[in-house]
Amino acid sequence: VIETNKYVYTVLDGITQFTVCLHQRTCTCGRFQLDELPCPHALAVLTIKHTGYEKYCSDYYTRKNLLLTYQFQMDPLPDESTWNTPTHVLEEVVLPPHGKRPPGRPKNKRHTQLREDGFKKAKITCSNCGQQDHNRKTCKNVRPYDQE
Image 1 (cartoon, one colour):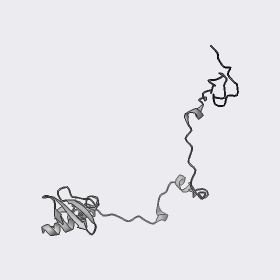
Image 2 (tube, one colour):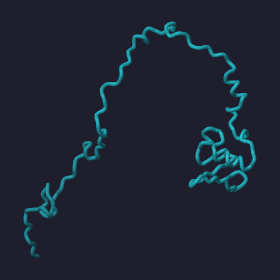
Image 3 (cartoon, one colour):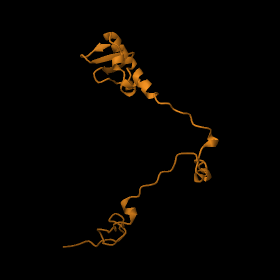
């Protein structure tokens, strides 16, 4: 454990290093902020500082909140045969999906280009003879030699 400043520490765990911020209750491993309980890296920092971890646990994990969760009596559900289920729900039949997926990679829908959506192609005209459907390189019409 290496102290960076008052609240930020770097914890070396073998090859990897983790940054723990006690003020914001975060660690780069993500468990400290996700579980709202100190992760092993934060516990290492708290052990070095000789500080109790209870202060860094969420209030959800306290004995008081646990008892408040279960303060109301919860009755179990009665037997399924005594349930009052509407007839339209009982008559509805849910079937499994049809067939199996074919083997291999699924085919994607092809995105059509603009000219395939109804736009016409531009006509090619020859710069040598002026006719359409070919260009100057493939022109078979010989242009007469201009003498001026």
